[in-house]
Image (cartoon, rainbow, N blue to C red; front, side, top):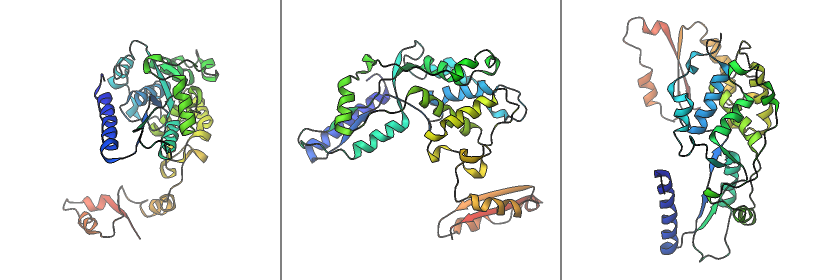
Length: 311
C-alpha cells in the first residue's frame, strides 16, 4: 500500500485471516471506493469541494449572509485537490453514493457463506460510475455556478448529468465483482452521479446555512431548487433540527426539543444573554456546581441560565 490508510486496511484483512485460522471467527470485509453524498467529514476532499461550491455560489458581501463563509486558503482548489493522490493530474476514480455503501454494509451483516472453511470473505464494493475530482467540481458548479458566472451558465444547472459506464481498471474492480456482489449480497448501487451530487450539495447547503439564505443571494432560486429536488432522497437525519431551521416545511426535521422552544423563548425574552446546558444523567451533582452564582459584579443580571434535565 502507498498510504497509511491502505496499510491499515491491509492490516485489518490480515487480522481477520489470523482470527479465522486460529479461532474460527467468521468475518466479511468490504473494500469501498470513493464515497460521495451527505455526511462528508469536515476537512475531507469531498466536504471541502462541496463547501467551496456553496461559498462561491453565494459570493461575498451579500447582505444577510453570515461572514464566516469568507474565502480561506483551505477552500482554494489546489489545496483541496492536493489531499488525494492523482486528483491534481485528473485521474478518474470509481464513485459510490454513501447511502448505497451503508446498504452494502447491512447486506454484509446478514451474509452467511456456505463453506465455513474458506476463510474470511472479502468483497470489493463499487459501481459503474467513474469521475475525476475536477469532473466532480465541474458537475457541482453546473448545479451551483459561482456567483459571477450565474448569468453565463444557467443551462448547466438544468442539464441532465451523464454517467460513465466504464470501470476504472487501475482500481481493480471488474464486472465479476459487481456480479459477485449481486449474487452473494443481493446488492448493487442504485444512486447515480446526477442525483447523488445534488443530494450532497443540498446537505452541504443546509449544514452551512441551517437558518436559511436571504433572497438577496443572486442564485437564491438555484439553492432552493437543489434542496427541493433532493428532499425525497435525503434521510431524516440529513436535515437541520426544526428548532434552529428556517428553510421551512419538510426541509426541517422535528425533534423532542421542539416542544420546549416556545416556552424557552417566553421565559427568556427579557434576558440580555441566555446560557443553556443539558444534563440527562440521573444525578445532578455537576449541575449544582454549574449553577452557583458568579462572583463577578453584575454578571448574574446579564445572564439567564436554563438547564434541560431528565424527568
